[in-house]
Length: 193
Image (tube, rainbow, N blue to C red; front, side, top):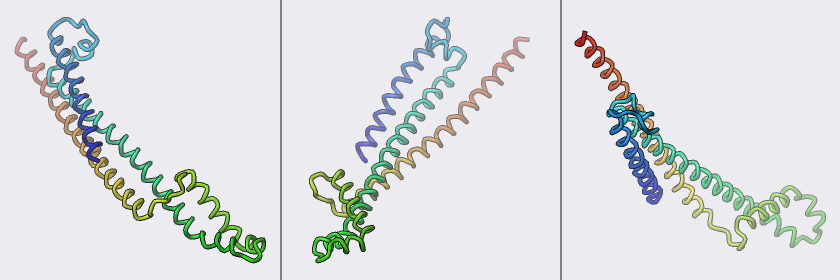
């Protein structure tokens, strides 16, 4: 999880740097004639609006990264859950399979236990695909790994919720700045008249 947190922070810092460079170039072009694409995009914006736009971009990137990691971890949780079910099925019906091997009348035993034997064979085939070396992990180990992944997902979901909260705050700040600038423009026009 520490590596994921560091990766999220690194991506957010990189995004902030990119957005800051674009914002600085756009702000410096704000007072000049719009000659570049970034200046054309932000030419109608004030410096605070461009800065808030930068923070919004960084927050969105952070939220998306958190969601991607949460999705990948959820897939791992599902895969581990499937492996646990297969191992449980294998262990549950292993005695039935052993009974077939030790039976004095295998065809009759097979008829009487056909469903259990099919479940056993299906579990064995799937487990061999997952663990070709024929060494099954302990269920406790898989359960602990799954629980750690679930905790990681909870943390990532909290990061996403925090990002959404920050976006709401940034939207409020953007709206406040926009309202202030509109009021300022109106008062400036009234002074000129």
